[in-house]
Length: 112
Image (tube, rainbow, N blue to C red; front, side):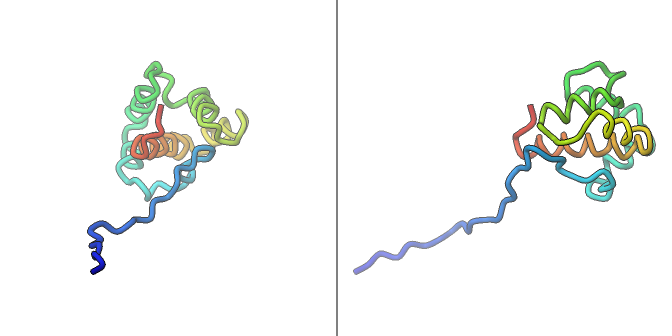
């Protein structure tokens, strides 16, 4: 008599962490409305949150240097020029992208 194995947990589809790229696009504000609202109504607060997450000075959170540091830490392609352009033309979008990326990497356990 063959024993029957009962499956109680189904395998789930998990997306692999994307280590060498941004976890969300520059204009993906709708993917995390809380971050977007915080960036729109209290930009300095969001900058301090980003700096705190990265163990840096609160005044540095919304800077090109912080974005460049983060990008190089996670091997995200780009340049200082592209970081500067992002912050020059849409500082809120650039900072929100950085915070969304930090949050996503924390959820996946790959934030250091």
